[in-house]
Every structure is written in C-alpha cells, then in structure tokens.
Image (cartoon, rainbow, N blue to C red; front, side, top):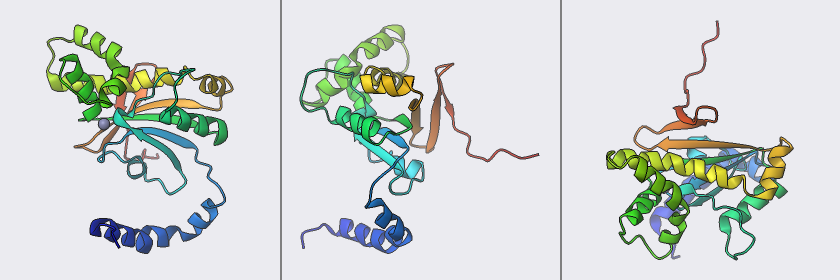
Length: 217
Ligand SMILES: [Zn+2]
C-alpha cells in the first residue's frame, strides 16, 4: 500500500471518530446534498472553512482557490473552475448564501503586491491574481507610504469586496438575488488569533464576530 503514513493515520482516525459519529448522516447524504451555504475560500492550509464554522458533512459547499478570488462573469473561456462551482451551487443546489472568505498572511495577495513591484510570481499565479491588479494599483496609489503589512491586510479585504462585486456580474446570481433567495457575505479570518471578521455592507467595515452568547436578562 502506497498511502503515506500520516495520511493513513488521519484516515483511520476519521473512520474511528468523525465517521463513527456521523455514520447515519453519511448514509443520508449519499442520497443527495442540500447545503445552505457556499464558501469561497483560499487554498491556504491554515484557513479551513469546515473547521472555522464547525460544519458537519453536507453543510458547506466549498470552493477553494488561490486567494479566494471570484473572476468576473465571462461569455468565453474554457476552464472556469470557480464559475462552474458557482453555477452548480446557485442553479442546482440553490444555496441561500455565498460567503467569500479572505484571510491574513495570504500568499496570493502577497503575490499580487509582488507583481506590482515586477517580481516574478509564477506562470499561473500571475494571471490569476491579476484579477486584483486594478484595485491593487488604486490601493498603492492611495496608500503609497503605508507599512507593507498594512497594505497587505488592506488588499486582503479589498479582494473580498472585489470578489463580491464580481459575483454580481453572473446573470444567475443577479437573478437569485433579485428573487431574494440568495445573499452575499464577505469575511476575513485572522490566522494568529483564529478570529473571524464579517463585512458590514453599510459601513464597508470588517467587524470581529462576537463569540460569546448574548446575555439574556
Ligand atoms: Zn490565501
């Protein structure tokens, strides 16, 4: 058997613990999935949507790519992995919400900033993070003197907002929103504090999500 030991150990634990706890659920899920939430997250190993939202199997429909980006709608092109997942989630699964989840220390966002300095960022990463070039250049112009870490964090959040905007360019998403059966959300996760920040649409500010239950009087 060629399976690496660490993966086999993990799989065994999954069978003994998580699967044992959810065996009935898996049998039910084999008949079909009805997740209410789609999450678009970064491929980064430190930002796992299922862990952050304590989601059971079948609860989250997750797409992960470099920097959690959504491209704008395009009539042409062939390999639209993220767009295909969006179409399936909205048209077939009829999810009620899409969450774009950015995060701190994002390598994809760092690549976008590196590309602005004409540093090489990779054959495929370059064009992909090029989706952010316009908003990145605006940010750099506006905040030319600010500390690189602040600039990175600012772009991580702007990228979420850009992806939210790009979501609205998909006709089937616009339609679902008009029919009030789909809502869009933006979030940003701080790795060191494992703290989730949620975008307030009115203020445009990402605010820490309260973790203590509200006191009842
Ligand atoms: Zn990332």
